[in-house]
Length: 591
Image 1 (tube, rainbow, N blue to C red):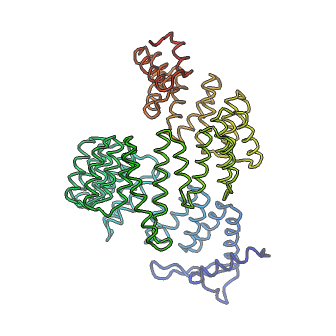
Image 2: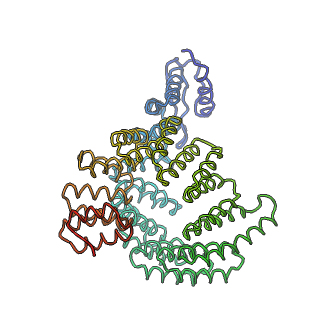
Image 3: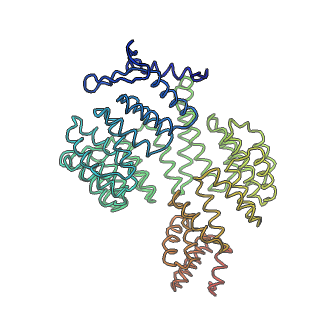
């Protein structure tokens, strides 16, 4: 056999890697034989490295180099079975995982675990892949035995959780974990935390909270338990969860992470005064913690108290600039902190409609990693001010560091022209970008959407199909094409398939939920449509969604609700054509 020069290093490296595993063949051994000798339990066998064996290993490595990982894994699996060497089985497992073939990975992991049963990584890999394949028979018993016999039970619990987490059926995963942990529940807070997380993943928030409280009973000082009581409890009994978190913080006043988490959750519930009160207490206890100034500014900004936020940010920037001057180059993160503060000032200025102030703040950002973001954002703001020449000049002056930045520059410029009402120019820009960077799904998607606006449906459909080919995980492409069919009331069978795929990829996306709801409306499943459209409207109370939700309510004879939703839609977007068209079809005129 003649070896290609590029393959020789692979063979040499493999031989070196197995220097302790392979023994030189004895003089009397036949050239084509493979002999294995078991050493002490737990040690790999000594193996006679014959020409045939070397050839098989070489074939596997060459297959891997060519991207044929399944072939490589199967060849090495055969070698492992012939030599009884767990390291070859491990290599076969790695090849199978590289090829994303879970069936072969399961075979190789089981061989690896059989040949090296004391290796926790091998056993865990085998169990995890069995779980991910839905093969859970005996899994709970196996995990329970491993936990029971482990010297470090917490580590065994963590490994069990990692294995069960591979299961796609989260309710079944919870059931397996329930049975696996039954022997340690009276003594292990970690076991209850694991069950809390599993219950949450399975859609059982009440059970999740109960398990978190049980963990806290066993370990009253556990910050992990307190965090889960807050996080999970907010979905079940928000007031109680917050009250119990305060009680924990009274006993553990230095738990800064939990305090900030509580501030965040209070802010998310629009309890701004409560959040600021807690921040004030934190600042009084640790006056040198200047990062709290920034957090306080964030809360005020969320509350719409912009003057207070700006005053706090000015104070924060001044302190960070002093730190920067007083420290050696690169000794602090003050530059990045100041840039974050200026980005928040940009957001505030935009909310107040002061785009020139937003631009000024962007121009003051000197953090190198934010330079590209700042310039593209500045260009967008000049576009909003109507200065398209300045916007284009800024973008043309950027020297993209890579292909991703080149794509972003082209998309940004096209969006500026689109928002300025110059759709034709935006299309021409994207067509040029598509020629320059063919097979770039982001460019094709935006071009397709603009062509759809121009009524060029056939070109739009072709581009969406190409995007799906280039990026099969692009939920927006499936949704856009599916929704177009639904809106036109054609190809509904294909629309269903497209929207089902979009929903699988992004199940909580309000735009996709709206599309699915509108499809169900078209197929006269009004009750199903109502469920999806309400979920969409709760997240995205936009006029177009209101139009669909109102029409569904009208079809269900819930006329007053429909009128209320349509009124809300017109309040958000006066003159919205979708809402007005739905009302015309229903014969409704709002006062």
